[in-house]
Length: 322
Image (spheres, rainbow, N blue to C red):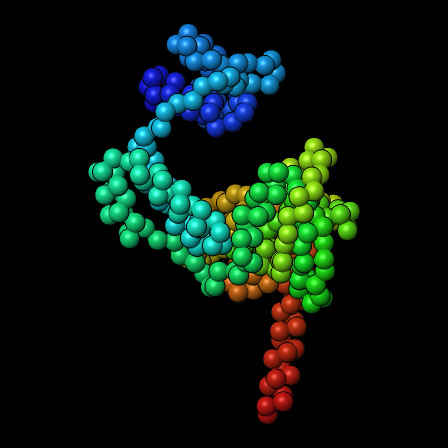
């Protein structure tokens, strides 16, 4: 990126937030802090009213760029986002994003509009199984509550005991994993943080009641805390797979805390960190004799117990049939 393009991009970035830290600009554009300071000074000399607060960051005092044209590659990336949103969000987000995309397309050059029209039918996102069913407008309501620091009132179906409970929660963030969206929130009833699957929320209302956001963890702090949880400590696991099956593990291994692997010729040694030894053991059973457990012994013990259960089960089935 040449300097003129970078100065324009910095100015656009400053318009997206109330305050922007110099370090944030340095990381986004891959430049040093010294270069950031020099670029900001150049913008000031060009008449852009940039304010600065020591230890906080930069901000625009009274300035707004005219509509910015998108490049072809930027517009194409938005199309990718639209395809993902179509498959992995609810109708409320999909509808709003489509509206935004139409507005964006309206300012594109005719050639770029035609480029998107040609590209759209040739980009797809696969979806395994049925998309989780979310209540109407759920994702949009939650996003607004997170941004406004509003307490949510929800009715939640707990699968493990097949009951529904009414909760008032302080939303921390939205997190997508295990093929569905989750609401991470501080539950006022339980006085602790909880993870709510959105497809198990039966109803949800924004109460409009504000809560002090600074007293709660951020989403990343919550995730880090869960990974460090003493109730579920990470366990170092070493496995050796036959290379003929190792190539099929590319996606699944990351779900089990993949760290590194070592090529052993016709085999591959993999290092994992996971708190879910029993779940890992059940997954490994599907690979039969093509995998060997080097450590820990506790994982080997679980595997032995599961295989013994299987042996007894099918021996009993055989005896009943004959």
